[in-house]
Image (cartoon, rainbow, N blue to C red; front, side, top):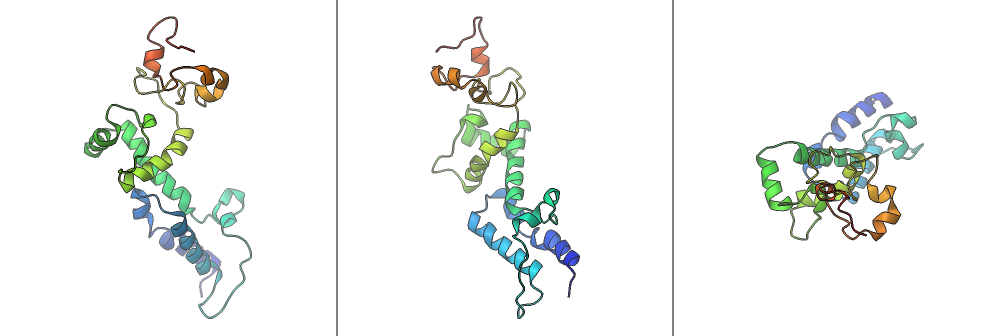
Length: 192
């Protein structure tokens, strides 16, 4: 009995909001996202359980308003953004949980230098899978350069130096050298 607008409001306010708590802590598997989209799509297109209705378009174009869609929340993007928020807070804030994660997973390394290991928690593995996209859209403030990799982190320009100067990156000996160690002497501490 609901109009398309009413269904749209219910999808965004209820069906899309129910899994948000889990999205905040864990990377949701693709199959779960597909199943959630199946139920949201079925609710939007079908009027009742007995009556089948044809779907006039795919589900993905309905999500993006800037491409003429209806503004239905993209659950995959929502999940990545919520996990990226943890990474941002881990880098920029001090607190009990940040200290705990730094001691357990980072130790003396920066976030860009750590990788997922087989014994890591489900929460940390989700953060590590989101990390490349988070770092691709982010940029570091230089500071003293002790936590930023010279070639592999984005700190000068809009992309890492390894992408700006691939020929130099291919022949450099210390690919993961820190900015502080490279800029510590004149001439620069870079060996090819």
